[in-house]
Image (cartoon, rainbow, N blue to C red):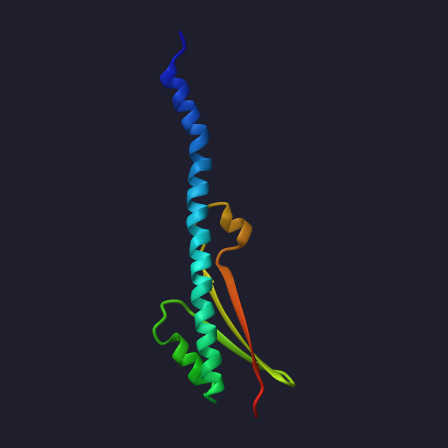
Length: 117
């Protein structure tokens, strides 16, 4: 007769790290997509402020006013358009996933606004 408890323990020890990686990885991916959606809204707000002829320093101050994270807004003027690039970083908690994605993971959103001088 085999030891059923010992077999179950071995199976649990083999499967648990994979299960833990999948759960934590799912949470991290949810956090990344959620934060990306938040940055999308912030980029839209920055574009709206730019269209209202606000200064770059005012836009940066307004964006970071109620945020816990450091968010940067870069304004690049081209011939016909202005590129508003909103960048921030999020830390990855999952061991292994942070090696694949980099830690902290950088998220960048770009909005193109027609140039009006």
